[in-house]
View (cartoon, rainbow, N blue to C red):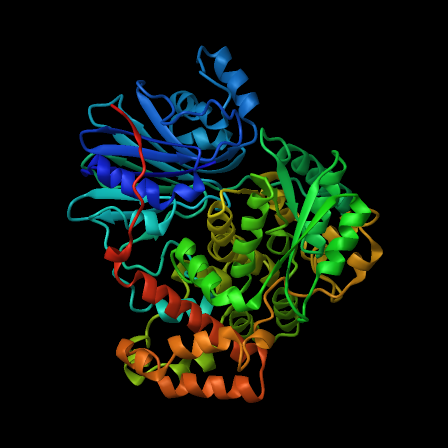
Length: 604
């Protein structure tokens, strides 16, 4: 696991490369380095997880193909055996070390052989001109941000936005329509970010560029899984998850489990405990708050026999915690659980663990959201499901957003959709049932943008590698192959996953009502709290008027409602606006990014 960065058809000094590396050093504190040549450079920061004393990057140094790698390849031993039989030699057993040899054998299709999570940058020097290749895993567990300058025909990239901004030529011009897109989807979807000139490489995508040329992008199509027999679907899912959890427990460092107390993480915890003693972690908030799941997590831990760690954070610390969280994310994410995610992974690392398995993505794969169930019901009855579904995705419903904007900003947005057009068209008119279209939208667009980037950035902020069994391609393929009735039917969500968990979890966990794994913002955002005072200060009318997009009076009215009659929609909207203002204050001036100095080993 690492952080990577670099440039192509451009120039960057060693100092500039060191600055970028230092800005994401938290994700790779164990080693750092770079290689440079005329027109290009590759750099990395390493978090040692496999072969702790090997793994020096760039891989293939001195050869015709050199690569930097962020992620984890779970079939690396099998690939290494195959490549050795073809004459390739490896200096160590680090998983990323197979990348140059695999590329030499299979060219741009080499990623078809990788099973894991990854963002890769490699330079091929065999032709007349060097060629750069960037690649991401099929579901988007490891993001890669880049900036393409059409005029200069230059490209810069990094694992995190704040690090990418460390390259001098990369600006931080904010996209003027991004506020509406953010409030509509809780974070930018697709390849867009909050910045005008920064994109994120979509999941399952390869970008190739020759020195001085124009990048071309290709999207890989996920292989279809065999449709399981309906009466054996739960057994197949349980067996596949058991296999993947076992593989993901293998590391040369201590591994922990994130256990929220819900079905998904609890099932991962129970399956992991079958392999021997494990440590589980749960987070809660000091005081008495709604949605407290600690007793469910404790019941799962006792049932599985884990060594359980209860992490507790003080709501009085939320303002400082929010600023740190936004700094690491690089752009606003309106999910309040982001604060807990950051604090939880920090506690995991402080307890001595470098890897943690989580239950993320089960809802998208197996049909776990109430909004999915509601949309399918409405569509079956012949009703218009789209508006309610999109409002359920949002931090502020469409009517609320319209009332918050100034006349000028509302007019500016008149012909702009907050969703990427291809995603919107597929959601509305694509092939398959409504549930199939929603699942495609959730997996291809919402999951990588809203969940996976949050988990990646906030785990790596604490130097922890998050591993996600439900994102493994075999599990995703099996889940996507399930017919609608085996995912949502008769008012029950995740039918196959619940059936797969029977006998593995306490009955109280299986029969409990589903509740969001989130921060109870509606209860916590109340007059007299540190969070309330922080929000009132950052969202004061004079400050908003200077920006010109939000009506200060309308935002003040939200505070009045929240003070007298608190509700989830008002609290969600205020929280999202607060997160946006924290982000805008930090990133509106890229020159404000200051990196600590750090020694870097330079290879020619």
